[in-house]
Image 1 (cartoon, helix red, strand yellow):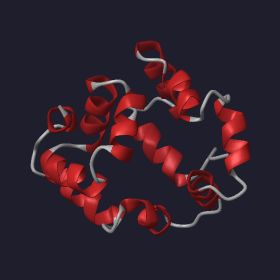
Image 2 (cartoon, helix red, strand yellow):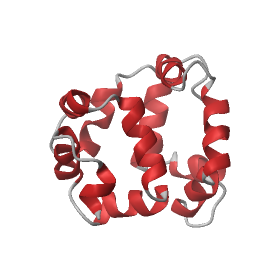
Image 3 (tube, helix red, strand yellow):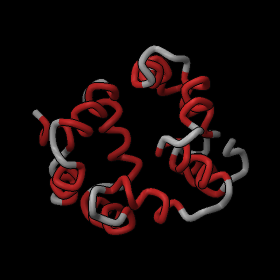
Image 4 (cartoon, rainbow, N blue to C red):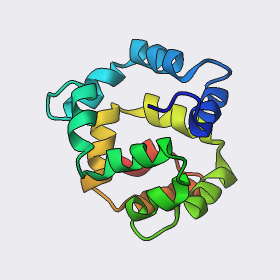
Amino acid sequence: MAHGMPLVKKMSEMAHGMPLVEKMSEMAHRMPLVEKMSEMAHGMPLIKKMSEVAHGMPLVKKMSAMALGIPLVKKMSAMAHGMPLVKKMSEMAHEMTLVKKMSEMVHGMPLVKKMSEMAHGMPLVKKMSAMAHGMPLVKKMS
């Protein structure tokens, strides 16, 4: 879907030169990321989920738009809960590099639990604001 797209290349660079697929595989060895994604999809295999949600759900509309070259910021805007992604990324970058933050988010607590809490426990913008002030996401949520 995203082979050769700018975002994937950027993700690959953040993964220290490894192709994104290898990075995902490496993450899956430390914590079953694919299984967690499947759990988020309510038991459906991730690929099937992606295929099914492509018919109107936000996540794959975004993915599809990315594949068509639509700017990520514009697409993510609606999911940012009132705060443009660019501003959020900029604030997060003040205290921690994105790669380090991603790493902490992955290692700090199970990804599915974190995603669930981000979706239900506290507004995303408030969490992002805490991260922008140097407070790790895990500490903020505990």
